[in-house]
Length: 245
Image (cartoon, rainbow, N blue to C red; front, side, top):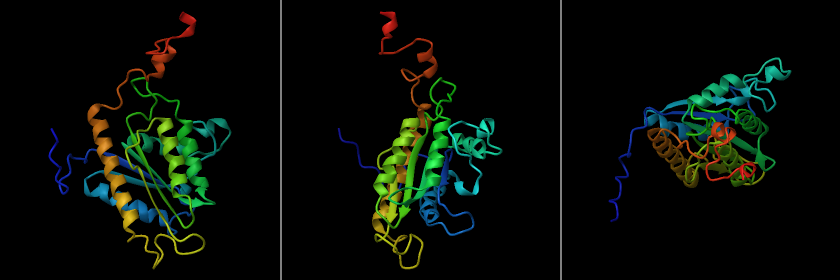
């Protein structure tokens, strides 16, 4: 039996118990204009309309140390803002990494944020799974040179590898004419009115909300066959340990 089509004007669930974190990886410190922030605002606005608690952080404003340990002050750095940001990451059901394109690739700040997410990827949740399990991830990309899909591919691969669940069409971006020219929020750029970008941003945002709702209602990813604690204890569901043969 084919299900009746959903009412396009009526969301299928409530989302007001969800929290989302957008990490804007622009190279510009506040309060400088960030074109990436313009795209973040469009997506975050959709979430806020549904009652989602939304936090937006501009990573370059924070003293995030370089390295792949949870707290780099334990490894020679005088200060490190990452542990505080990590607490925000873990408080969020949805993480969106947003940033610009430079030289056809993700910006250095984006890469640093991904590295520090990776630094905590060995930490576990109460079920013995990797800590990011049960959360959803997406990305937003802006620029005026080619590379939106390449940058999104890199971010989304990284997030899923660390334990995030990625919904369908979990990325959106805006790219102006190749070479020097107007950026997303510049007058006459056409960015905020671009139908393709607006459609993808809207679809991405709702897909993040839907999947976060599903995971929260299900209590996260089932803890079977994916528990690091069980694996280390010798329970290798479906993967025999050669040493026991």
